Length: 409
Image (cartoon, rainbow, N blue to C red):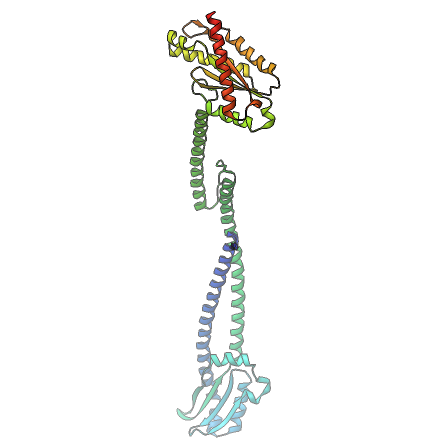
């Protein structure tokens, strides 16, 4: 059992280019977004770390008095006021012995609690707390430890990423539109080329040409392709002319231009295969009576002139209805079509005999006489080509014998 192979669906060149452009633009913009975002986040992280260190230094000065007097409440009030600004998430104050004097964290103030996503960003920007010593007259009297969470920096990060994403999306749209505009010229040029190729393949019309293109490379390709088409068109024309010449030589007599034996046989076979035409067709065989004497007396060139004259007179008698053929030498034949009665056949024979009573004027100025012995056969009385030709041949030689007998008497 034969299994038909399903034909694979092939996307058009336009769709392929669009897909490639979309993939290229999306990939490029995605890589650019990741690179710029990563670079920006690393820069923000360094900025946040420096900012947290500077903040710890500032807070240490604010807590100096509270630590000197070991006033935990004052230290707590200071941390709470600074913490409300949202620059850190927790702070711990300890004395020089490491004992904690005060601790403040956002979890103690519900209004300052950050959402989980903000905490995640802050955790990445501030991976570890910053510890800053508290000095009094150049002596370390304690320390403050800050855990970073700068709402301003975090908001700036989100806004920057949002603006960056929007800009890249707009750039992607512009790039896609510009790419589509560039591809439209390419696709139009390729469609012109493929249209010409398809038309040539379908109709074998090599006169088609590719129109000029705005794209230099495709314009050069189109000109080269047109030059190739010109060469193919010339080759096709020569081939057609050679075929026509070969066909003419194969089916026509080279001297008289009449149909030869092969063309005669093909035409006769066509008649016999058609029952309607067969009943209205007759065959004439003709042979020169004194052609050898003309050749011997005036030469073969004169003989060719006589054959040409005979061919011309036979074509006049045949008109556009009947087919005149030359077998070779002084042997001729004529296929009579659209004849219904023997009287019509006899009328053609009489017309031929009448024309042959006229002298043939040679180029040398001499006049010669040439008669034809004509045999006939009716197509409806023969089943094969050989049969009708044999009947016409016997009739012709019978006529030739009678002609010789009349000449002898």
